[in-house]
Image (cartoon, rainbow, N blue to C red; front, side, top):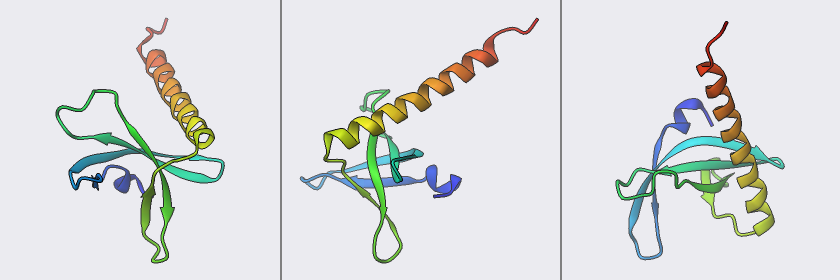
Amino acid sequence: MTEEERDEIIVLTDEEGTEYEFQIIDVLEVDGKRYAVLFPLEEDAEDDEALIMRLETDENGDDILIDIEEDEEWEKVVAEWERILEEEDDEDEDEEEPKA
């Protein structure tokens, strides 16, 4: 997935047929599998609420999003995402510190 694809807007539809727009804000790899971190574009969505789904390739070579159903897989992916966010926070803090 290219940097441009990470910024793309996708639409997901729930069981009731309601459509929701998301922006792909990151793609990470855990245990050899790719995961997309999606941020809702709805105004009433909570500020820090992101959705993570497994990113696979179908028989036509197109990327598709799959729900993560296994607790162990989910926990590993969330831990990796939190680690990435912590690293970014640490980098931001380093940039803000005045240099002597």
